[in-house]
Image 1: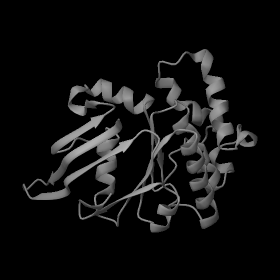
Image 2: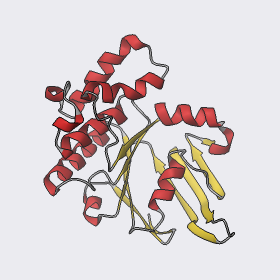
Image 3: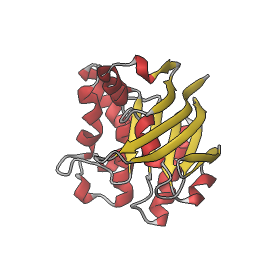
Length: 224
């Protein structure tokens, strides 16, 4: 069974003058549990728009999006916010870490808004940090970390709620080639451990690390 499925997904943006700009045009695909998929395309191809819809951050104009067997229209905004925190993990190009906050507290952040008992938080945070091999940096602040280490913190934060799927948006975009390779190897390892990973990228070499590539061009899928 597919973890997520989109059928004829369309997204049209309209400006104040009523001029319409199509960002996605009839996009259809599915992603099964345990897959490692790259959604690849040049700037302006519709990658970010698609990620926002898949991550419950935006709604499609037309078409259907099903997550875990249910259409998104069946969820309230409160349900979607809850799912964003507990079922999805996000990794961003800019890391999005709190600056004057330790690694441990940055990783803990999603738990503050979860239903997980506080007594379990510390174990979950430590396990997530250990999974990205940053135990020796647990009390450091982001300013004391390299770019690659910051991205590892972001991955640990995405993992701490044990989400059903991890969305990585250009996760190597701000890193040198060595650090970027290390991050991709961590994502590979997590996928082998059973995590579903969807990686958004414009860099073609990243396809070598994933199991499957969905290519977007001008809002349309050209291969999946």
